[in-house]
Length: 220
Ligand SMILES: C[S@@+](CC[C@H](N)C(=O)[O-])C[C@H]1O[C@@H](n2cnc3c(N)ncnc32)[C@H](O)[C@@H]1O
Image (cartoon, rainbow, N blue to C red):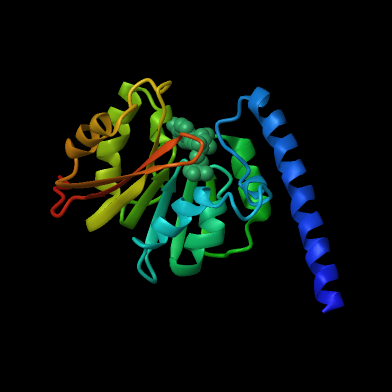
């Protein structure tokens, strides 16, 4: 019992130290102006702060065993590495930020997970027969022109019956996508089936999850 109490005390200290590191990281991260976050520092914020893992848990629900996945705007690849690679046959993960991709590659131990530095609007995708295309917390960073270029290409890169799944982070500061009502027509222009499910975070952020499907895709 004494040993368990000792381990509990060390565990609490460990969590407290992690919280301090995460606090410092967030203070430094802000002024750096990065568009992506190293999610290892979310882990260090402690067990109460779990909501950021929604993306991993909800993403898993659309990935069948053996699926071929494209993750657009993957950041440092936390969710690919910790969640999706376990179930998928192959994941191609793209981000235009070379620093994010360098970290993603350094942390990656999965052989079915490949990271590419690429602008997803301007550059071709590695393949065009994906079962699922993911894109979390990134579309709100795109302009009108960029969205109009990207969404039809996503539809074309999906296999028939494939799923486009991800989230848009809704904040009043976003240029285009500030509310659920603004998100729906963007997807409905390209996909027959659009389901939205918004999640309010304790810090006021609203993460709007989308699940889009196009049953018959004309590839001509
Ligand atoms: C908020 S982060 C989200 C990262 C990751 N999806 C996640 O949920 O942790 C948004 C990411 O989108 C990337 N991004 C924005 N525009 C992009 C573009 N045109 N091509 C590729 N990546 C882009 C940024 O570099 C950034 O890593």
